[in-house]
Length: 330
Image 1 (cartoon, rainbow, N blue to C red):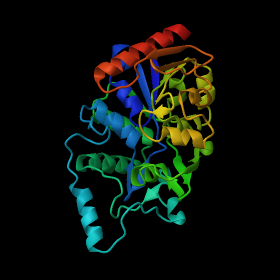
Image 2 (image 1 turned 180 degrees about the horizontal axis):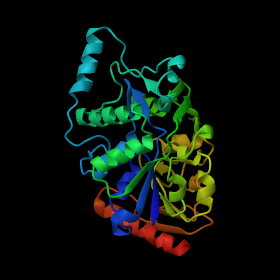
Image 3 (image 1 turned 45 degrees about the vertical axis):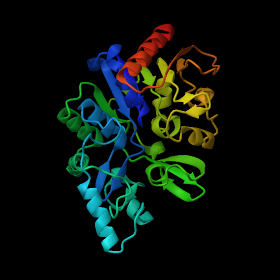
């Protein structure tokens, strides 16, 4: 039995090769929900959705988000209407009073749907409508995710990290932003002061999450701060990881992140923005998988391979290296 912690695009790319070492029936994936937002009244769970679309065989593998071949007519129409009506464009974070007025799960991450700042496809939007309707019908996020996973034919167990509201908020030199606003709308350009996982101290792991952490855990090459950090901020998660076998795959090649703002965010939380900074981010890890050209030095087993994943064959290679690492430390 193995559990993957997943966020962003790094771990989903790795999961393309997971079956080379781990049977789907014995695989659990816990997905980050700190990136979730409510946009125009619809609850969007990007890291969950990537796994749904990947498992359903419809993921857009050029972007690693959204549905391949999806149309964007609704998004385009929203932009046209906003322009014609003289309405503002760009992220419009609803007022402080509105952040906790309504659907509790969306606390601290509500955005107007006027001139949507995120491009959401039409088939993709149908998933958000269904999820939101299930939530409004008293289902938890876990229950809604289970229904959607069944609809897409997933053979792994997919769990959101929590059924409670947790928002990844980035404090920058241009003000406080939700991570999606910082990364999607501002392209990660503002200088980051610190990162906050609002709500995490009062939240609980979703049903099944702590139990799944009793199995061997793999942390994929996701952003340690905003993809994995929200999970580690949940009560009981870090303690559970300290009690089990954990193998972490580096999202860095030395000082360079393979993708995304991992370096800037690591520096903002006082961790070295490099492979060696993973020792600070994941003090409970029993082994690390790093790139063959990476000279990072750890005080625990370190296995090297080419960790860049551009194809299923690449993913299989890295997964087999992970399996080797597990054998060494189990």
